[in-house]
Amino acid sequence: MKGWAKLKKYVVADLSTEPPESFSLGNWEADGAARAENTPVIDALPHVPPLLDGEGNPLRLQDKLEENISWLKKHFSYPQNSGLIFHSISLGKHSRPVIVVYLDSLIEWQHLSRTVITPLLEADLPDESRLEISDMASSVFTNGQMESSCFMGDIANAIVIGSAVVIIDGVDSAGILDVEGMEKRALEAPKTENVVLGSQVGFTEDIRTNISLIRRRLSTPDLIVESGVIGSLSRTRISFAYLKSIANEELVNEVRRRIASIRIDYIGDSGMVEQLIEDHPNSIYPGILSTERPDRVAAQLADGFVGILVDNSPFALIVPAQFPLFLQTAEDSYLRWHYSTFLRIVRSVGFFMSLYLPSLYVAIANYHHEMIPTTLVLAIAGTRESVPLPVSAEAFLLESMFELIREAGVRIPSVIGPTIGIVGALILGQAAVQANIVSPIIVIVTSATALASYTIPNYNMQFTTRILRFVYLACASFLGLVGVILLSIMLWTYWMAGNRFGVPSLSPLAPRRPTRDTLIRAPLQKQVKRPISVHPKDMNKIPDEQNGNDSMESGPAKGGESS
Image (tube, rainbow, N blue to C red; front, side, top):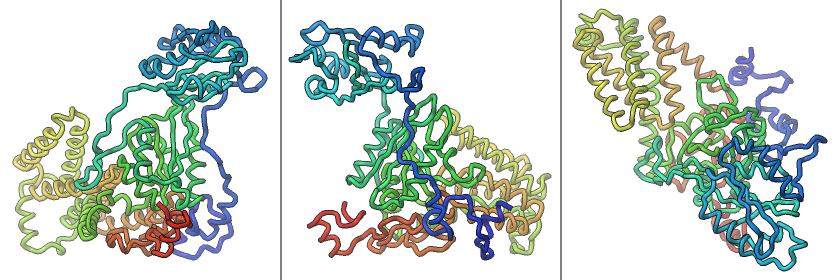
């Protein structure tokens, strides 16, 4: 019944007054505006909760240095927990003791010495009796950026993320300086989204580097990056980015709400966040687009989408994601529209071949011989004359064998991985044909299906076709084309009826909305509107000359028209 409630809006008129539970962006649902008013608005992402004392108040730093050191040693289980360093020095020419606390595995010593240790030793403070840590930011720590805090929770969290904490005897607040020096992977070309034309730089595992790659492509103050922390144990930093003048506020609030509602102890990658915030966790169809290309994220942000970045992950998430986005690449915008359209048609054909080709062959060969020309029927029968297995068993055998080869090629060392995949497929296929276990025609079908699957640019969508291929094969084995058609109706209508962050999964194809950037990409000069599926604040991508001149002379007149 719940599935019928999602599907019936495409079949019959819904006269019920009960509001649906799912979030709907814009006016895709009749009562979307009413439901948006009832949705709680969260102003910020979660951060590390403060440490509380016995009375429930935030635990504060004491003005006695010995008490603070004792508390930090107890909190970090020192000296059992190795790596915590307490560096004792004297402040300038005076004898007031100072302690610098940090984790040696997370900082860079030269940066620490230049930014913290040396300035403290050479500090010349006129009136030491009235010393305030906040005043030292402009007089002592001039080589770095310093923040001050009087709460022990902030101090402990700063230490574990790679900062150095300066605690001065007699001062009830500490200075926090960023001296992070962990090893980082250099910028490299994307490994899963290769292009011929376009940027050859992909995301890394450092969230700061990834944010900078996006800001380099969107040099506008309209780019908003909100940050927070998720995971009670991992305390993983997470950020989501959007353009304030373009992105729909309902979409931004919904993304913020879903991230804030994550309740789990460990987050290791953006793939875990994807599973925790998506609408249909049990659906086989992907609902969020993952990419390791900064230019792809920047282009989608300019269209009104929202990008999510997770620390320690080289993949960003784009929401909402509809079916056409999974068959598009960043390279499409860099090519002439004729070439991009041709490539999109090739990918679409490859998607349907990967999904349907084996099942169609089994259905026709078993139940619908009249659909094949007589000469081809005789040729197929001749190749299968000495094969003991039925057609469906051949298809399942070869598809399973290819999945084993593909998985083995991924898991074994990269130097010999491609070689093992190619040699294994050739040897096993040839040996199976010579041993009369399978027919040559099924080897051709399986090979064509494998090549077609590699035309799908998204890794998650490849998994969808790989799994559903076996389901379609099973239906074709028992019911022929009738089974394939019935299963297609069930799966496509299920996919069509679902929403992804308030947007129908197959939009703008179903429900149909006018667009110039789906299967056929129009020239850039004619792409004057942003995708209506995400309901951006500003629909115009190319403002007219009058508005453009006005905005340049008098400043930004309308969100999204100034760059």
